[in-house]
Structure formats: C-alpha cells, structure tokens
Amino acid sequence: MGHASLRRANLATVLRHLRDEGSCSRSDIADATGLHRATVSSLMAELLDRGLVREVGIEYVGAVGRPRRAVALDGSHVGVLGTEINVDYAALYGTDLGGRVLVDRRVGMDAMGMGPDRAIKELGRVARNAIEELVRAGATPAGVGVAVPGLVDVVRGAVAFAPNLGWRDVALTVRLRAEIGHVRVPVMADNDANLAALAEYTGGIAAGTPDMVYLTGEVGVGGGIVVAGRLLRGADGFSGEVGHMPVDPTGSRCGCGRTGCWETKVGLAALVRSATPELAYGLGGAPSPDPEERVTQIARGLAEGDPRAHAAVAEVGRWLGLGGSILVNLFNPSVIVLGGYFAKLAERLIPPAQAELERLVIAGPAARCRFVASALGFGAASRGAASMVADQVINDPAAIGSAPIAATAPTLAGQ
Image 1 (tube, rainbow, N blue to C red):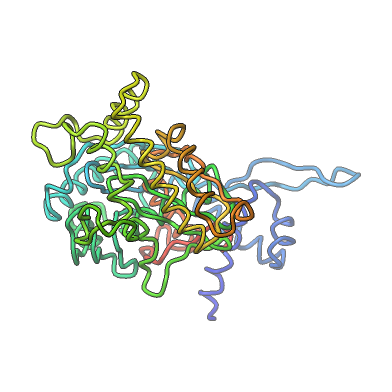
Image 2 (image 1 turned 90 degrees about the vertical axis):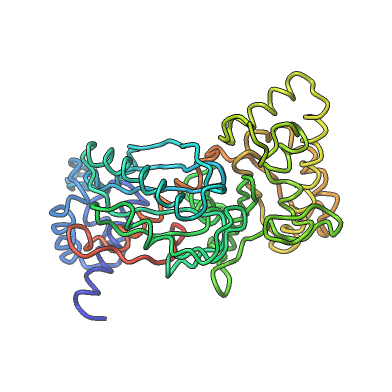
C-alpha cells in the first residue's frame, strides 16, 4: 500500500472510531486504533481542516486531573441524500454527516405506470429539490443513494430486474445523475431491502443483532438478510428476493411472471385486494396511491370490526408465518424485523404469524426467533440509502473537497 492509500485508510479508521464511540481524545484514539500518537495528531489536523471533526472541550483523566482535548465527528457542512423509488411513491431522507436530519418526506408517484424514463426524470426532479434544501441548510451534498425494489448490480449502478416496477436492464445511476443535472454528485444504488436492513442494523429496533432478517412490507416483499453481522449478498449480489419464494403452486400470478410467490400472499397489493377489493391496485379511480393511506383505511376497517379486513389480515399473518418459517429453517435468525405496512399492522399480524412460524420451524422452540415491528416505517430504505452515502464519506474522507467518491457495496457497521 502506497503512502497516499495508507493515509486515506488511516483517516477512515479515525473517523469510523469517532462515529462509533463519540467524542474522545487523540490519545484515546491512538490506544484504540493502534496508530502512533504522532500519526493521530497529523490525521486529526487534516480532518479538522476538512471540517469533518471538531474540538469539543477539555476532558480530565486520572487522579491528578490531567487535561486532554476531546474531538468529535462533525461534518455539518457535508450532506448525504438517500432516496427510494417504489411502485407508488418516492421517499427522500437527507442528513449531514453528523446525523442532523435535513430532509424527510415521501412523494406520491406512479412509478409502476410511468415506466423507467418518466420515473427517473421525476425522481431526478424531487432529488434536485432535496439537494437544494441540503445546500440551504449549509450542507454540500457528497452523494445520492437510491433504493430500488429489485435486483441491482451495485458496481454498475444498474437495475437488472425490478418486476413490480416493470424495469429490466436500466442504467439507473447514470441516468439519474444526468437528471440531477448541474449538481455534480456521485450516485449509487442498491436493493431496497438490503438498504433497509442496513438502517435497521445500525439504528433500528434490532440494532446490532448479528443474525436477523428484514422484510420490506411493500407492494412487493424483499428481504435483507444479516448473518453473523454481515449483509448476505450472494455470489452476484442478488440475494434476498424472498418475496419470490414459491409457496402456493395453485396461487396467483406474480409480477415476476411466476405463480404462487410469497409476495402474492403477503404483499400490500394482496392485502388491499382482499380487504378493500374496490380499491385494489390497478383499478381506475382509486384514491391516492400513497401506501400509508391505504394501510390507514384497512386499520380503520379493523377498528370498526369490518369482517373482510379482519379475515384478510389474519390470512396475511398466517402466510407471513409460513414464509418466515422457511427463512428461519434456512438462516436461523433471532429476529425477523417487519417493515413497511407490516409494521403498521404489526399488532394484528404478529400473533398469527408467530404461531404459524413456531408450528412450522423444524427446530421448534429451540430456534427462538420472533417477529418485531420496525420503528422506521416506510422510510427505512431511504435512510439506508443515506447511510450508504455516509459510509462512503467515512471510508474515504480525503474525497471531501477533492475527487468524487467511488460507489461500492455498502457495509454494516463494524465491518
């Protein structure tokens, strides 16, 4: 490793330590990382100059109260934007490097009906607006992450296949970068469930759980699988398409073209079709396509004792447990985190799902896996997309103010 590469690696080591541990002194950083104290002092001078850390005061240690000047992660002038494009909405989540939330919203959008050209153009428009908000808040954007419900080639930034969007072989990052226009920032993409799992692992209800599965709970159903603290990507990076596990050979036709996939039983489209068939996806004259509004309607039906809503949710819960049992038999997670609409209806879904899971898991009670509801709701994937960009900055802090950040697969904290 050359001198420049070694210095970049050391800068990243120091910045990751501050992100994970909070404020500490230079000598503490040297002790924790194994770097020489003089090296840490030199690295800290550069990070201070780049505005990525700040002095936070004097700490006194030891019996004689020896003073040490503490430093902490800053990056208030560095912005990151996470976006998600899904069947019926786009979500945006922007922060500075220190985690201050600057943008957080969802926009109704018929991405499924628009086709890739119009959908990417619209995503570019809302992303430009969000970038302008970051800039007005004093944060220069360092990159944009995009979460997509489908198979994503992370290195090329291309969507290989997104069945519920109807996309195939779409050069997403190149095209979105062109739509963003005059703001020249790197754009990177990944599967929505992978990014939501990243958000959950780093800051969700199951944060730090080494073996877990995250389920998206959208029109389609994807899974982010964490094994021994690492995101399971597979040989080609296409793992986690759990919604397309075949569970009913006599069932409905799926958006992927096959029959009886799990998401035809537990996806939001399946629930809406059973609970409120007059408002099913694809019908003309339906109200706002925002998924949270659809779920609110079903929750209202549950509260009012609507038998269709109760029967539909109970049926989804049973199928959720059946599919969950397959995942437990394969991966033995300790937690299955329910995201999206699953989390909104968790109180009704989890009891039948947990009962079915425990009935079907081979290891029985010994497996000790439980369903839990995400607190991140429909915003988990966009949060994970923002974290993906922030990780790139942390991993190469020397890129701030100089060369663009290279897009690589995101990693979980501590990898």
